[in-house]
Length: 249
Image (tube, rainbow, N blue to C red):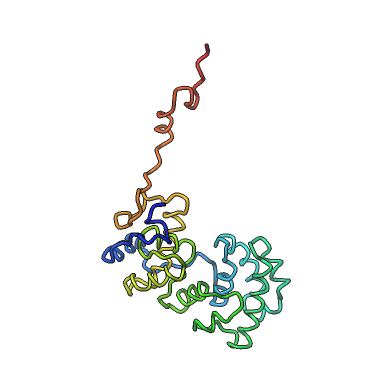
């Protein structure tokens, strides 16, 4: 395996610290204040959406929260709906039964311990059912403007592939990013990296040919742009070309 993509490699190559700022500026595409792609209208809705997003795409979460939030827009309504009612509205996403129980329980705790408000404290957030470090980081970043780094599968991949912050675990990548990313860029960098990993630096084949930050990335060899269909066909034997027939005889 290429050492630039192996989180366990002792020889993992790091992006030059001086290149990190220019790399992030390049991939930001001028979006100075990026927003999550999860749909929400309140801190409570974001918290619930992030809990539901574990091992699930934002698109899938948005489909179920549209109906869930219409029925239960706040903790009191969510508690009234109950885990069974929540489950009925989120059955199409993975782990829906456990998630329904957690959403009902965290809603109850928000009422009992925080007057129905989402706390802006890490320890208080992580004490809620279904809320781990990554979920707390998303809420603290998006709602409370804190410079946190929620390392999901995209950021973990980019941390190792680009060399911006190689690490064997999500926490190692998070700590590396917090140390290496320029402080003034930490808050937006979280979403810049997620969106870049989702749409450009994809898991199976990174689309290096359209990456604005490719010049700073340590990943090698860079993926070349795919050939147009006509060019690909011209490389095939005559009997394999589209519209061509095998010679008879």
